[in-house]
Length: 103
Length: 230
Image (cartoon, rainbow over all chains, first blue to last red):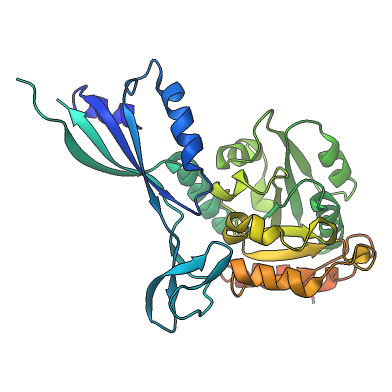
């Protein structure tokens, strides 16, 4: 994906990949970080950094009528008022949202 | 000249390729009026026995088929084939989960348009399958009475990717001192409002309710015509 972007932009050098990682994505930050370097070898990303922004889980709370963080990943209720909610609005992300490039 | 690096916004889902295929599968299932149901659970929680029973019961009235994923062996496909329904094994080698592309490939050459229900049995694993959409309409997560009531708290992500929880091996509940209330509480904690079914594939207890549930879901998904002769 990053390679496509680099080529589309005229073979620029990618210095860093910025990733949004939801806590419910099923992917672990440390594992991504430790495997990143190996995965990038001999690709356009060799030598680049992986910057991960972790996204906490948020639910829509019917009582507060707004998006709220959950109490914990084991307890899906509004961190503020305690109302349970299965309506997850944030926290499943696994997306590359930006690239740092040098032209 | 050595310009400073600059940030460019990309916003691309890393699992995009899987999601694109999953979306295509979901559309295909909808167009063909098939209810696709996937099963996830830890190894040994009774997915195959449950699916064998399901296929046997549904087969008298519906056209059903199954795809079953394992790292190795054709054992599960052979077991499921005893139901008389068409079954295909997907062996993943060392991969711990099914991906949408494998479903697409396995369906190649199958006339799925002739089906009412398609079941997808994932590899026994409560971790990685959470991240992969298979294009299914309904995902069931199985929890057997012998594996600990706190499984939902240990694996909240998979429970959050599923639609319905099925408690299996209910015939063993007393012997293993299964605390049903605790299991329900834990499921409710990680996924408020989640529907819970209880079954025993061995005795058949709870299977009638599960059949009714599947039939209802099939009727309600995209306003499917009832094929059952009543």
